[in-house]
Image (cartoon, rainbow, N blue to C red):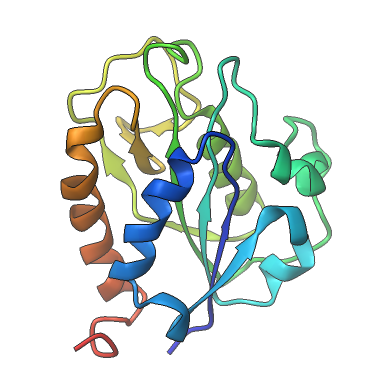
Length: 181
């Protein structure tokens, strides 16, 4: 089985509310090592075969402050950390508000996915556009999101269903389905 790490940060607790059932679906601490971004760095990312990454997008496209430790790599500059994620699989999820963040819905998730790809990582868990209504998003690639896009503020009723639909293929892709039965 792969070594799986889960990196996340939260400001309003929406990302945490989304993260907890994802963690339960994927096997909890026995399978996935948790990292709060306030205590993590890019070297931690390189130590694992698979990464699950969760970060909210704030009102003007801002990343959550716990991610400041890796901020240079998230900026839209050419500065990347000197780590190699080749062969690593990365699944992203994000919390954002498609009304208040309509011009930058899920942008941070898109920036994170772009950086992990630039470092050689393979994106898993793309999510389709399903009833969302926003003006712009850096998390869109070829008509779908680069990960699970959640809006707890305006679509809370879809949270459980979307998490179950997103984690099922991840369990297979990560080789977890045999461990969870």
